[in-house]
Length: 186
Image (tube, rainbow, N blue to C red; front, top):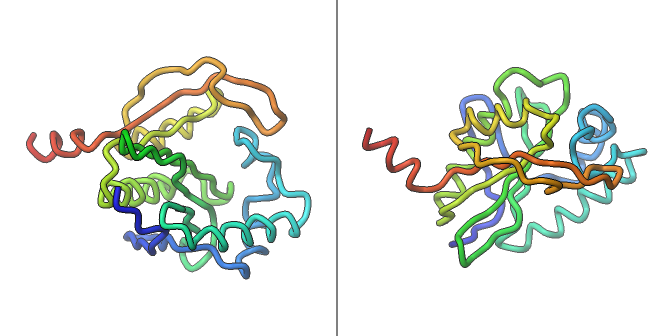
């Protein structure tokens, strides 16, 4: 893959951009402190803004790495969520994606729009396989994956650990470059 790091991506309704340290308050209040948002994620809701600031400091530092991908999602000029890519595998040209967003913006197709944009970007840098998992009790996340063109691959038994350390089953989805080529031909 030809890693270019986190570059700004614009869609019809969204701006996907690098996080900044001054995003801490919006990130904290719009989603990072919400137990319902983090319910099926691997990290606990942030107890105070200093946790959010620490995360952002780490991400801002990591932007120096060409294979670090973490986007802030802006909708109507407001920071509402995050989407990132991780676990690059150069041998397989694969990379995983993950995302979260504030509850106030759920159900509007925003995350699907963001995920489609990130998938397009990752294919443009030479990824062949883009995959994601979600907790089996979070089917809404699976619908985002399906609407973004990813195909359901199956359940990975005890393939995840929740934010309190309990192992759980996950559903896995993926899209490969040939999926796009086949759609353009048909």
